[in-house]
Length: 185
Length: 143
Image 1 (cartoon, rainbow over the protein chains, first blue to last red):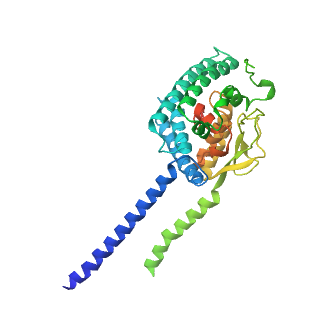
Image 2 (tube, chains in turn red, orange):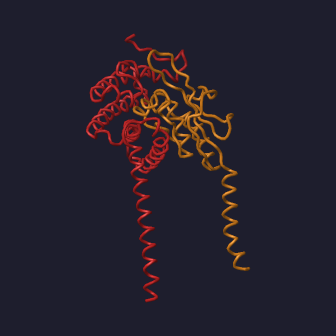
Image 3 (cartoon, chains in turn green, brown):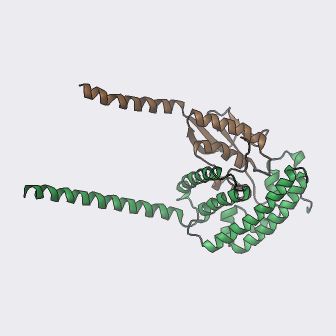
């Protein structure tokens, strides 16, 4: 009888502790999920930044253990993280996959040109000009997949600014005398 | 008494190590200069990183600016991580091909990752676009 008196409160305590831990865990995971869903905004910005910074670092560590992966695979993996960060993990999968597929096509062509430049087969200007061509074609296709809002959210520029965007990116880090001029201008 | 003393030894070691860890910790921070190429419509921000002090900064291309701007992200690194960050900052700046392996954003992340951080892209002009084309870290071989 005495033992039963001791066991009952002990079991009750264990039950209460487990229930409270489970409830806390569930609410934490619900909170975590709600912060990753939907587009990035002021309220989830800091949380997402910290969460995806860890994810990017972790992904890079995983890549370092797989030396056979090409640069395109790595860039695609990292952009998938940017995608989730900016548009949310609940973004329609089919649309996301379609964008990532177009990105992969762009990167594969870009890598081929990069290797040609590094081996001395083409000049830097040619690399920029040819890359710019298929990057713009790819971005135009992406712009048809995403709405205006989604495109800006993801790339931080408007669909109307695709033309010449690679030149702008490249010229950012070049001294004025070395900037590559867009021949279409 | 003897037992109490024995219990105190690991505690003292723990706090000593904690203190040493804190004393050797160095900050690594990324700076968004908000300096953009004057093009119509949208702009691209230049970024650089500093390790320990504002006189120990790294940028890509190596001649580009390492002054001014606003702090974008800060991380803490122990002495080993800080040394690795410095080595990475110098080595990647000389080994990466600009516009082919990455731009300043990727170089900054190569250094920041030593403290487990990457740039907070939402406020840096052109960041998503550069990750789209080069990934978060770009390609920094032989470093």
